[in-house]
Image (cartoon, rainbow, N blue to C red; front, side, top):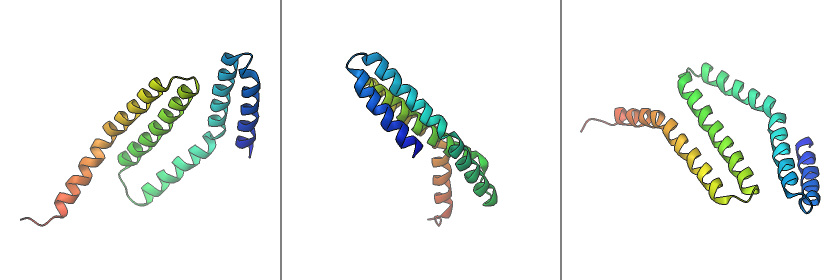
Length: 127
């Protein structure tokens, strides 16, 4: 409720201020976006701790879990940056941020994809 309320208040303020001071309205939107992210830090930490605990109990190699968490983090950060850039009216730069995030995700995923392929090949009967 706090996040929705903060978002709605910021939206109304930004709409009012945008006509007189568009730069200030944009800075308000960026600031509120960062505040919302900071409000979510505790929940993010709890999720990461829970995933780590599940992985340890399941005897999953922690390197894979860390890689997946990095991939998720890159996806959220790239999306956040792209949305802010779109709000500033820079759709082309936002698209490049999204592309950069996708390339970084692919680069991090290659070792996991390689292990999956090797596992599948190991399961296939020799022909």
